[in-house]
Amino acid sequence: MADTATVSAPGLKRSFRWSPGLILGIVLMSLVALTAVVAPLALAGPAETLTPDARQGTSAAHWMGTDDFGRDILARSLVAARLTLLMSLGATAISVLCGVVIGSAVWLAPRWIREPALRLIEAAVAYPSLIFALLIAAILGPGSTTAVVAIGVAGIPGFARLTANLAASVSHRNYVSTARLLGVPGHKIITRHLLPNMAEPLFVMATSSFALSLLEISSLSFVGLGVQSPEYDFGRLLNEGLNSIYAQPLQVVAPSLMLVVTGLGAMLIGDGLAAAADPRGGRRHFAGRKALSRPASLDPAPQALLEVDNLTVTSPAGNQIVKGISFSIRPGEVLGLVGESGSGKSMTAMSVAGLLADELSVRARTLRLDGLDLLTTRDAKALATGIGLVYQDPGTTFNPALRMGPQLTEVSRVHLKKPRRRADTDMVEALDDMSIQNPRLRMGQHPHELSGGMLQRSMIAASTVSQPKLLIADEPTTALDVTVQAEVLRKFRKINKEHGTAILFISHDIGVVQELCDQVLVMYRGQILERLSAADLKAGNVRHPYTQALLAATPSMTETTDRLATAKWQPEDELETTR
Ligand SMILES: Nc1ncnc2c1ncn2[C@@H]1O[C@H](COP(=O)(O)OP(=O)(O)OP(=O)(O)O)[C@@H](O)[C@H]1O
Image 1 (tube, rainbow, N blue to C red):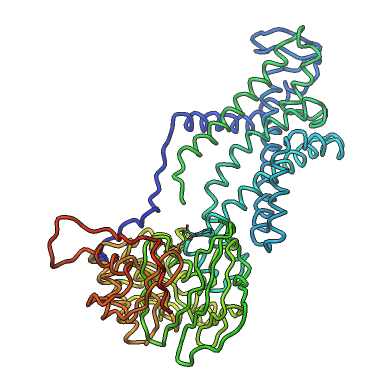
Image 2: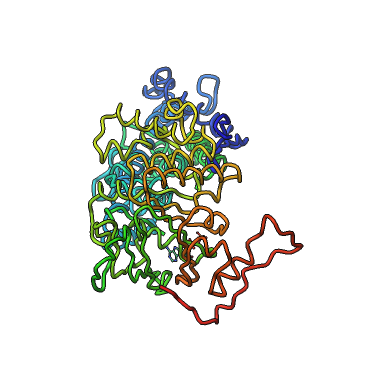
């Protein structure tokens, strides 16, 4: 149904609000930039030639008078715009480039380096940047290059912290988790997935940082540590005018006005962009798979494809989120995981995929997929081709900055080493198989050009094109409308029947689970309360009071009732785990 429609994926619609402040800022900065280009060409003579007309007041020839050496004050203030702007841009560039590199490196580093590095960056950010710059300038000696380096270096911690924080927040997106599962190297994740999606806040901060650099560079020149004569910027002009501030106040007024106009323009742009930007949106750390601890080993059941024995996930506060659960999935089996929100379903699935947040501690006696020890393996190819992942929200599954094709064919190209053309052809077939019309056209489009249903079916196609042994689907139909849901569920059944792919299917929806799954696990507060067949679930043959309460809370399509029951069950009840 959704194939012909082209709608924006949720969360990806962009809007931009032009505020009066932003427009004023752009006008002011354009005027200053124009002055910086034209003034040194047109006004170098009156600005730099020494004449006997020293300290004259305003006149038709000198609108703001002349300085101690007979030079035109207004011309000097306008010409100074070029050096001031160039220095501010240079300092901002140093802060942004070095900050982004350091922030990315910190995010990529192992936890034992990352945590102290972040504390160090926090401390550097808290230290006043101008004092820091004064210190650097005092060490390097006065000069324009010194001022640029000092102010640029002083701004690095701010960008490093922003980059590390943004990387941590973007790294929660599903497409980054998928890239990690696929074994994409950390630096590629940064350049392909993180930086394009962090560009907006970085740009907004760079604009504000430019305004700050302008003021700080002018301050350094004003106190004599920045630009030295015969060069001059706004700060240097203020420094020279200070000596004769009472006799010739215009010497200070003109560069002050230029400084105010330039600073105001940059700040208005920074504020305007920050307000206009539509925000998108624990720390995840890429270092291959998370190392899991294992108390002791146990031989897996021979027929099991996935063997999970005594899996425990503990939060940094010491709370057990998953409490020693055990289950297995046979080849070709569809296992449903149901339970209310927060019961630990996703934590269980992400433990299997090795994609849990760094701060969570994971222990298991056995975690094995078809002979592959998931506790210790670093074999990215085996993981990428062994496990497929489908997430709840198709809108966050794909990187909005990249076209669909390269994202969909990543496993084939990176791990199966298929040539690009062959990978594309296979993916077109897989998309066609998922009833996506015009698959070739879709491959060249960006995610926001596809509907939610199409994105979800594309994700299923990408997850299954390499025929993984296990497909993990974490509430894959929750964000879809009912018609699309039914279609997506049919696709799961087709994959299971045609390729014999085992599926770990997570859902709140008992009705969906009954239809799709062979076996069902009922989870509550990190424990498995009951394991039963879908047929028993359908027939209401359930033993545990919580499962009975869950069933009672499921609306029936055939019976009419005025009120829906809620899943009432007292947690004080004895937890009757059946493993
Ligand atoms: N990084 C974390 N640190 C501490 N606790 C966490 C962290 N991530 C998740 N949790 C907690 O773990 C519990 C289980 O979360 P999980 O996402 O597995 O639930 P779920 O059953 O999948 O719920 P839902 O159906 O809403 O997705 C929740 O209470 C959640 O708050």
